[in-house]
Length: 238
Image (cartoon, rainbow, N blue to C red):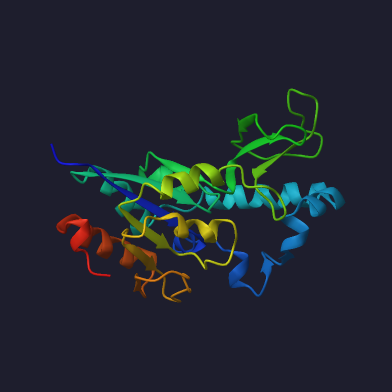
C-alpha cells in the first residue's frame, strides 16, 4: 500500500479577496473605513460594543453574498487525489473553504458565523444572523463574535503547529506572512518538506528552499496542485 502524503495549506486574506471579501490591509490600515483598533480589538469592543457588533453583522452579511473561487474549489477537489490527504489552516474568518467542500479546516482567527459569550471562550454557538447589544448567551453574558481580535490569544495555534510538522508539502497562499503567530507556522514544516508560497507580492518566507509562485491564488493554487498530483513529492523542484 502506498503511503498517504499530507498536504498542509496555510491561507490568508488574499484567497478570500478574490471572492470579493475586502481586507483592512488593502486600504491603508482602515477596514471598511474603520480603524482596526476600533473594530478588531478587546479595547475597541469595550469602548463601543454596538459599533463592533454592527461591523461584524455587516461583514457576516457580506460574506453570505460571495462564493468560493477557483483556489477554494481546487483545494477541496484535491481531497479526491489518490495518495493525498489535505488539511487547511486559515487565517480567514469566512467559511468559503467549507462551502467549497474542504473537510479538514483549522480556523486560527475564529469564524464570522459563530459567536460566544464575553465570559466564556470555550462554548461556541452558531450565528446565522445578527448579534445585537443585549443579546445574551445562556450564561447571561453579552454575546460577541467568535473572532480572535488583535491582542487576544490564538487558541488553535498549537493544533496548527502540530499539523504543519506532519506536512509532506506545504502551500502558503495569499498571506502577507506578517501577522503572528500564524506567520511563524511555516517554520514548523520538516526540513525536507517542499514549501510553495503562492502570492503575487512574494512575501518573505524567512526560510530557505521556498518556491515562489507570483500569481493570484485562483491561478497559482490549481497550477501547484496539478504539479503535486503528477509528481512524487521528493521530486518536486523547489
